[in-house]
Image 1 (spheres, rainbow, N blue to C red):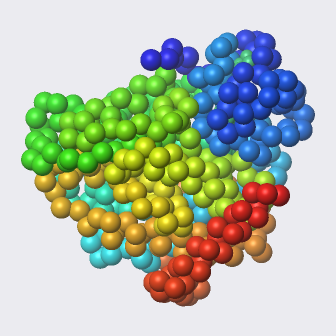
Image 2 (image 1 turned 120 degrees about the vertical axis):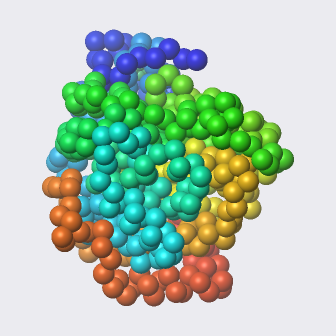
Length: 453
Ligand code: SF4
Ligand code: SF4
């Protein structure tokens, strides 16, 4: 276990400009001299040649810094300055529930009746003070079938809060620090108004944001006890609260998400123990834990050209599939809902054959629950690809923007769907196998062109 340094922003007084952070960075791998120069420029606020345009916001450099100076937080501060100066790229509206259109609003068109029913139940519930809440979160909302209808929900009151923005976790990774602070205050007010004491989350990211980033960096303290759902599942499996009825006899490899590297590495072992209890053999990838590669999402954080964002994301994510396939494992398992929706889209675009599960699905299978795997994931992956394609097309004519609101007006909600005829047409076309094949080829060719520039 690596020592934990309670994060409190970049600590300039500790930095000796050794350059190790950017030299050991699994994405940049800068020669030491260049790494020193680049980091000095970053500190002095001078033009960055590499970091601000190529960083995958993966947290690893904090582990590599021998001085515990938190270089990752300096990158976030610099991105925050860029955002304040230039705004966010139009494609980023996609993940902003208060902008229109956004992914939740668009995906609503494609949700099945069963999914609509779960979501409407989770979104309309008003928490009571004795509830043990389970926050479904913005990502799980995109594939509610991962947990919807499961006995796992019997232990909690599920609630779906899109305008909690996962506590600001994904905005934090892009350096939108001033917005994260507003979200932290909103979350605190909501929790206090409801009077709830226990709040569970399915993301390490949210656990870390609530328990570390809000109090230390945003100066917003919460009174609640935050429960990591992986810890809860592990404990429930170990104590027999969740009985295993069907040991899974296949091999898996584990994707460690960016936020799993926060808090000194305490998030890495529970998912592996869960897999073992469920009967899975683990075959590790070349880059794991503190060196783990990003699912691709982080490549979108260091945006340079709006148009290249999806290609950068898929290009980075395809490295993960290459490593996963090299292990010879039957399945790749993610314990982050943010990673898995992108990983499924990437799997479909690059044509990988490795199975891909969320850790919750592994537990459900071992509990004897039936999943509509893989059909439902493949369908959702093409829903997401259609939405990204649509959003990319409409963003060509849009300008950079600033996030002005963090809560949406429920009477004019940006979550509600409109007709979106172009999106529906794209989705219909993607049902045709030949069109999917041509789209894949064109997408990968464009990705190669952009990479060589
Ligand atoms: S956050 Fe990750 S990708 Fe970015 S500089 Fe640090 S180690 Fe490299
Ligand atoms: S942040 Fe740490 S690793 Fe990076 S240059 Fe400073 S002391 Fe070295």
